[in-house]
Image (cartoon, rainbow, N blue to C red; front, side, top):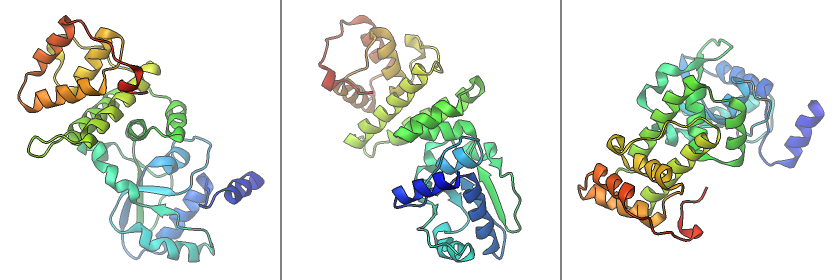
Length: 267
């Protein structure tokens, strides 16, 4: 195991740490605090340190903290007598709004207790939600290994719907390419859930209440993902007060004109 750790470390510029190293760094961080502080861990560090997936990660992702954790990296390295690059990373805090506000009610405490530091991990369902919306290679592997359960689905779908709502918010009814791209991230997340057998039942026309519902309703009705131009048109229609149910009725009744593969939402 030690040889394996060294091999991974030599191959990458950043440090590659496992569960043991994560808890060593948390203890070192605690030793440099002089008052109670709280951090929430997400990402690969949560996968490794809390949910038992045997792999390595290159940093400790902090979703939220009472203080600037990056400011303590040099102190932690000094405490551990380490020359490794920065290990605590709070860049993930910009993604906190991907989760519903009640995610804090689902936090899971660390297996260890500390003098000043309170450490929580995001719940498995919230972790899976963030990874579904990121969908990098490691995320897909983690999603499979984390093993989605039926009880996880309400939280996962609430988070995805929340992200769809937040990312689609337009200022002065002006839609940008970013809004469209973000909705395609949602489509990809939903399709991963479907491929894993963890999708919600399809909706009837009367139950379609959002752009996200429209995309899934189209796919269920036609067996294909919508084109970029379809989604852009629906979003503009919604911004101009066209009823979502009327758009769904149109999908249900009209003959869909086929489009080329490069125009469709890619998976």
